[in-house]
Image (tube, rainbow, N blue to C red):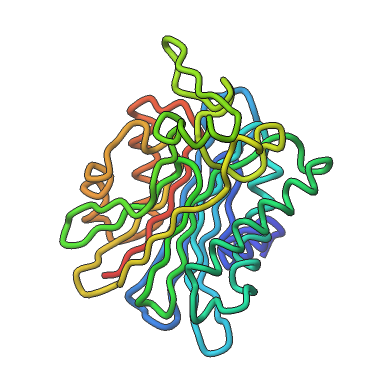
Length: 283
């Protein structure tokens, strides 16, 4: 086996992706019917790839955790890379995670953001949005997010958004209460202090006084009606609706092929942004 093949096997095993074009897949050991796949492709912007993904099943004592995340950096690939390595560890290590996972996620998001700000000299001035999904023992799903990467679940073919897009216009009051402002220039999207197009994110030290890193958290039971979950960066959601995304892949049994199909469809619709996508299939 060549060094490249060994690296690819390790990447698939640990479910990490960040190259200009990257993919991988895996499956649950607890349930052979649950599989996942991911696919990333670099956008047309003149900067390095800033999307990172985590997609893996991890054994913790007698429990299995499915860990899935999209980290979409801005002015930075260091911050999403840091999140890949630290955020889930911080969540799982939180006291009370198994009893009150939602509270543990809120605390871990705050702690991780504080750590990123303290390391700004090394990680740079940029930041990252995030959407994370933790599947506990194949039956309980906990989704959290800051920013505009999104998680969508399909039950009986119907799309349901589990995350909240943190739009600066929607959160204008809280931004202004912190001393910031939201710009709405013609031909542009709303931006915090005329700079950032999301109201919540990790990092962004220069904007942090006016920017939240508090996640929205949703809990969903996985039942017999659950077919699949899609996590993706805004490079996908800018060009297709939640239901369109579900309809595009509902009949593709291989999760990695489904993720690739979504990314390629976004490209065909002329998405210019980096595109990263994870599909988790339950049947």
